[in-house]
Image 1 (cartoon, rainbow, N blue to C red):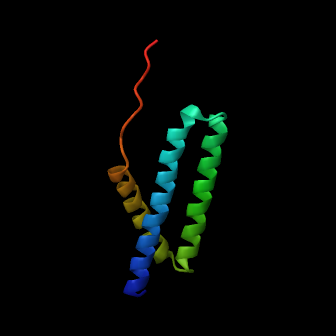
Image 2: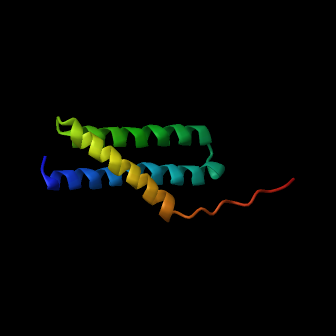
Length: 95
């Protein structure tokens, strides 16, 4: 395992994590106005999961160590999304 491969696996994991959790954020924001919210939630979950799974399989290159490094990057991507996306919540309507 070279240092460059480790860094690239970590960065790819960060990108996968950012894509997964950024997509989740986008989906949750769209649910209140979606015509079919259950379909949107399920489709979003499966698409995001399949992309991440395919990315992790490609990153492993027959070595499980790359997968572990990419999973660490995935966690960093989640932390980055939590840090940089706005936390603004819609106001609740009292009826």
